[in-house]
Amino acid sequence: MAEIKLGAVISSLETMFPPSTAESWDQVGLASGDRDQSVGRVLLAVDPLPAVLEEAATVGADLLVTHHPLLLHGIHTVSADTFKGRAIRFLIENNIAAFNAHTNADVALGGVNDALADIVGLGERAPIRPAAGTVKVTLFVDEGDAPAWLQRLGTLASTSPRYSGAGYWQRSSGQFEPGVAADPSQGEVGAAVRVQQDRLEFLAPDMAVPAIRRLIQQHHPYEVPAYDIVEVATEPAETGLGRWGELTTPTTLRGLAQRLIEGLPPSAHGVRMAGDPDAPMTAAAVCGGSGDSLLGAVRALPVDAYVTSDLRHHPVTDHIAEGGCAILDIPHSTGEWLWLAAVAAQLQRSLPGLEVEVSQLNTDPWTLTLH
Image (cartoon, rainbow, N blue to C red):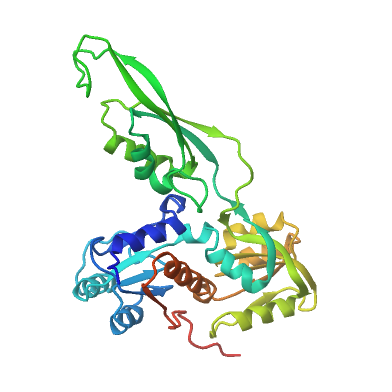
């Protein structure tokens, strides 16, 4: 069986969940590990908590993939006096790499929100908040270098999670004259230079622009790379935060809650309901994780219920007072756990021979609800 490197697993994960689609405040990707190390077994989990790290070591995992990042906020020490310090030390001592896909997994097709939408019973669906807009990048590179640039750009050169490195180019001619302070890669100071170039064009999410600029500055041989970035009009995005749509089988609010109870892992939290339990449900919206920031957007949709987590008193009472739909509040971690099975299946399809396990540990912090 061919050896599988960590870099190959990361490449597969980043094709599914492009890091360029993560929120600007987020930290996604490799937190610990060497891309050249071998990976035979992967453990998937929601939270990188001590019990999960211990489980990874017990099952012999070479890579721990979580939804939530271990290093979301900056740390200044890896001392064993702190949880994160102990976690990093444990990972290194046990030769376990750590990777996470967070908000980039929330917005992706087949990601966290689609898994939750499947349990609720949504058919055709669309994002509650569609992904950001699209830009067209035109970049002039040395003649014959366009294919290498598309490979280097990878998921940055695509607006669909199904493709990467997508673009086109044509031969072009250019001219410049270096000044006395210039350090040209071609030609000499004071003499006009004609060059043959590739005019490379590709589409990208507008949130990927900072990463594209950094990559151009790091790898382009020209002292002053020639490129432009323009916003383009596109069809509504199929990726983005949350999902909404019609239920394939209409039910009541109580029936919708029952689907969640049966589809989610057991928890002390259960499912909280705001609304008439017997109200008919024909359409719903979902958002895995903390979803109160989308309440305003949900009120503008033709839905009967909204399923999300971590809802607070005032946002919900205001939503109901404004005539908003019914609310179902589910545990944060269990709503996001559903997605792990889909990740496991996709990894095994893309990397045959890779062993992938889904952690069954309940990482919800609440242990008991008294009534």
